[in-house]
Length: 123
Image (cartoon, rainbow, N blue to C red; front, side):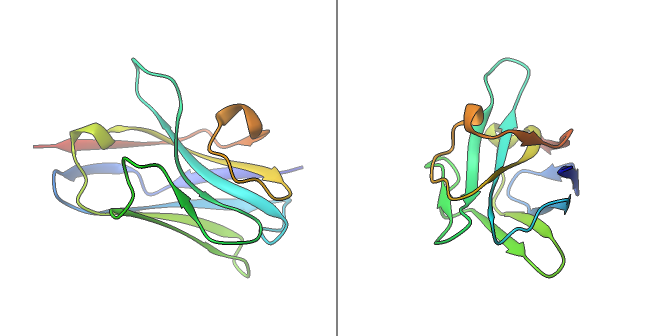
């Protein structure tokens, strides 16, 4: 059974940095495509970054150049380094997974989800 657990959320000042982590059990990160999504109360779930099972990471235009997704296969952990955060980055952040190679940041594609970790941005 695949289980995902996010951590690292919290409050950060605009312009600051934060690192989110996703601890994965029941899945080998080298065979799963892993992604970060976010959602605030008034919008649909938005894809942020994707680490395909093979290949280079993929980013949403809104975070490209500011966020970095990484994975540690040995530790079965996915991370999201968030830099220069702004008010539009405030949301609940979710870790998601699907077996195999996927290159799209569409929430409907992913069948394993964590419960989320909240990121709050203060000015």
